[in-house]
Amino acid sequence: MRLLLIGAPGSGKGTQAVRIAERLGITHISSGDLLRQHVTEGTALGKQVQRYVSRGDLVPDQMVLDMLRKPIIAASEAGGYVLDGFPRTVEQAKVAYDTARALGVAVQIAIHLNVPTEDLVRRLLARGRGSDDTQEVIEHRLEVYEAKTKPMIDYYAERERLVTVDGSLPEDEVTAAVTAGIEDHRDELCD
Ligand code: AP5
Image (cartoon, rainbow, N blue to C red):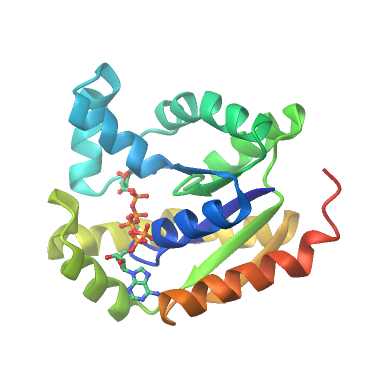
């Protein structure tokens, strides 16, 4: 099973991806976690991306695509993946779609976690992950989401199976809704 979670910062992508990956026995791939790991380890990529991540700007597409190609192929061969944070723009989605389709590892179901903005800000301020969970950077991340990532919902709605879930519900209820949405489409998936 190959899944994608789309949602604003703080919508619960990471939280739900961990649960879904465990439940379905597939690999959770978080572009944000991988980028933060590079920054923490001080790799060449980490040094290049640090300023983007701490400002809440998107890392250039090519860096993200290069970082994720191998993990996505490996996860597909190992039974599937749930992507969290990638693709992030229609441009990334187009490249990922073309590349993955040619390899037979394209996303089968896109799940959109829909959460009101006031809940997002409250959740992220409460979490305080680091330099990108300050009021100013959270506001910028939400602007970037509206401008660059939200249009991806229409992109997937036109091409793939799209499931929209109310992500403002308690975590267990969101997981149940995501699971039900996946089950609704399971019979249509041929590989
Ligand atoms: P990334 O790590 O992807 O961050 P994000 O999209 O801003 O999302 P978050 O991790 O903040 O939130 P989430 O939706 O995963 O929610 P979570 O489950 O943690 O990206 C960070 C940065 O990396 C970007 O700004 C960019 O610079 C770069 N980047 C990453 N991918 C990129 C890409 N593809 N291209 C370019 N650049 C990229 O939950 C948040 C909080 O809410 C937690 O405290 C959680 O406990 C709580 N919570 C979750 N669900 C619920 C619920 N149902 N009810 C109440 N609380 C809840």
